[in-house]
Structures are given as structure tokens and as C-alpha cells.
Length: 205
Ligand code: PRP
Image (cartoon, rainbow, N blue to C red; front, side, top):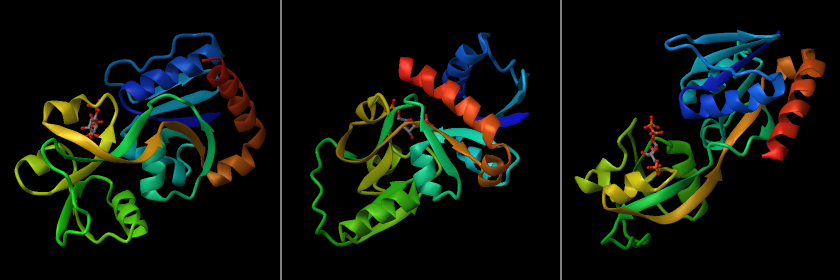
């Protein structure tokens, strides 16, 4: 039996669609249900940022999670495969009318992704103050809480509709299949069989 943590919402649906192709069946979480079982697999429907926790503790052998989350959380896991779904970018956003002078002192950046932000600016030797928010990041520059944001851009419409533009792209992200280190050792054959089947479905896309 393999347990796989999936990130709630669209990424879970897309992941189940890929896995359904291996199983030759339609996989779907029933409304409000958090566990789905099929064949020798158990799927857990968890929040995006919680996927790594289930995998690191070994409650889930495998997980599907964005590279942005893997990078932000600096996880001690095995990164097995880029699923090429859930594609997005982590980008710096500023107001349309602004140009940011990185040499200015006291630059404030609002973000959910504190580590990615700190590492990025440290690598450029730019000193910034990072303000942690949990959502609606795009609001921060509009009301003067921050000069810029670091956030996920997928279609770009959230920034656009709030009068923001991308100033710099920090990284590209997509969903990856990850494994718990002990599970990868103890259930290697089962995991590799699943990995190979999933890889061939991904390669066909
Ligand atoms: C993300 C991100 C942006 C939005 C970008 O939030 O924080 O607000 O998506 O997508 P777009 O470029 O297609 O407009 P999400 O909806 O994932 O919610 P979250 O705040 O729970 O992460």
C-alpha cells in the first residue's frame, strides 16, 4: 500500500487525472472526503503547504507539491519527478507606475515565501525588509504596507487586475512527485514501479 498526499484543488484534480491514466479509471475525491482509496493506493487531500509535512513524517510515502513549496520549506525528501502540471512562476511584483531602485534603503517586500525572498535578495546583496503575509499579497503595495511583493504568478490576472506588474522572475515552478526517504528505501520497488508508470504518462502529455 502506498499513501500519496495531494494538494487540494486544481493540482489534486490534475494529479488524479494523470494517475487515473495509469489505473485506467476515473479518480476523484468525493465532496468533503479527505481520503480516496483505489487499488493499492491511498490518496490524502491536504493543503498545498501541508503536503511536505505528511511526507516528511512518513504518514504519506509520496506527495505531489509545487517546486516553490519544496524550495521555500527546504525539505529533506527525495525529489522524484517533474509532473509538468501546475506551472507557475515566483515573481517580484510592483505597481504599474513604479520602477524599483534596489539601491534604495528601507525596501519592504510582502510575501508568503519568506525564505525564497530572503535568499534571492541576499544572493543579489540587496538589503530588504521581508514582511510575512498569509494571503491577498497583492494588496500590500496598493495600501502602502510594502514597496513590492514576491508571489506566485500563474495566469497573471491577479496582478493585472490589481494594477501590478512583474518586475523580475525569481523561479519557475511546477508540481513534483516527492518521496519520504525511509519509504523510498523500504518500498523502493513499489515506488519505482509507480514512478515509471507516472513518468511515461507525463512524457506522453
Ligand atoms: C496564488 C497567488 C496569487 C494567484 C496568482 O494564490 O498568491 O494570488 O494565485 O494566480 P494568477 O496569476 O493566475 O492570477 P492562490 O489562489 O493559490 O491562493 P493562496 O493565497 O491560498 O496561495
